[in-house]
Image (tube, rainbow, N blue to C red):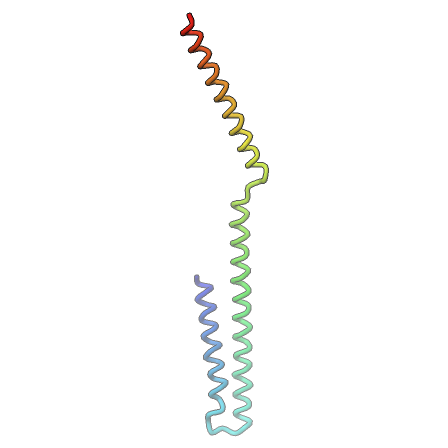
Length: 112
């Protein structure tokens, strides 16, 4: 959240810098002063753009790392589901066998 605020702030600074480049030519300065001001403003915009790009790359790297961490924490080995299925099948077979034994005991008790 803080990084996004920094990113937006950097974009706002770029916008102001670009406006400054446009407004530089509006005064009563000589051509040299105007050109120097434009060059200075362009250099400032370039530096700020570089900072924004670095922040953007850092945010992207952070997001990718968080995504990888989330995926790592939810990865389940492929054979775990097979083991669960096998255990469920074994449990059902054991329950069937127990039910048969119970029914046999009931039948034997009724037959005596």
